Image 1 (cartoon, one colour):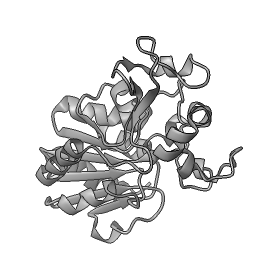
Image 2 (cartoon, helix red, strand yellow; image 1 turned 120 degrees about the vertical axis):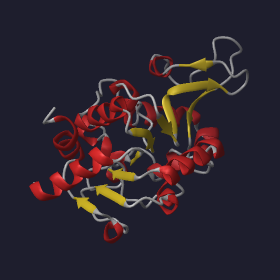
Image 3 (cartoon, rainbow, N blue to C red; image 1 turned 180 degrees about the vertical axis):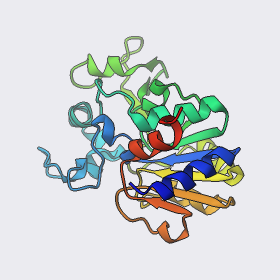
Length: 247
């Protein structure tokens, strides 16, 4: 671990007044939630279907093969035993101090909120939020887990779906505009656990006007050359060293 880079990062964090964190699946891998595109990721696993995971997690597959969608979804995307890791806890501490103004996450696991963070923009939705497509009644994740097959509304019998953005659907424009606003105001943008390949989330970096960009990701991103500091190490360890260790 590069002590000089850590100290530089710590100094930047301490002087920053409006920090925004943009995170992806790598933020939660240290909570034993697999990412998508790595060698051990979800998209590398063989499934019992003759289509890739991107198709299974599409709105078309959900509409046409809802039972199969839920079998895959329960087995691969819901991790009821997952708990916040050092990264989630460090980000909560920055929010508690008042310097972290927003967490923009591509994850749907809710671990940021479980760690205590409140300023969380879930641009891909949340597995903890589900609703009846017929009457709109809301359900938690336990309702999905405790039902076999397709979960149906206990009020009207309508089909319940996760409030997540599936392939083939657009992001919520209000959340996207809120994210753009936060990024444009930031004096420090920390990007963690994302290869910055998935749009429109990856495009948010274009709206950053601040001086300091810090990228923490185990693989290279196309924005590394534009960053103030780049770490290719554990995001939890880096944030813990910078935010919490010396407290």
